[in-house]
Image: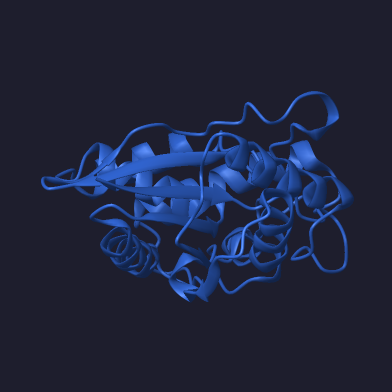
Length: 223
């Protein structure tokens, strides 16, 4: 049986000129996660990461913390959707990116509209169906690498992890069910948390979601 571990990147730099950079806390979260997984016997055959800087920096921190020497592969299908672009598509919701709570409210409403698929007149940077298709494709490729008997660690973002979780929990769900599950998963994924998927003869199944026992106190963050 193979194992696929889906990791959300460490805390990025909210409100900074370049969001796609880990904060000091994010770097620490990555190192802590690598050390935690290594202590529990995880030794990946390969580390797959998205093509974003925060994915690369998280993977580097995990390799350092875990003392791993695994090959690192890049799969841009694991990239996050353009969350700022989705919010900007609804200017009535934009309240500025400096206030975390205000932005979170705008983010949740904007992504709900985006994933509902009812805004045909809105020009999104990436349509919801396209986002689903590319993440599902990457999930399929990573599961194939993991099974049978392998261990693959994927470093990605909260949105793709939520897509993967929704697809694994209800693979036959319609679009509305997938969007509803995705929203519930996406809003609770902790920075540097990990979710485990087992890959066996009957396919892939979600074993755990959003584990973060390696975090406590100030290093436990959601955004």
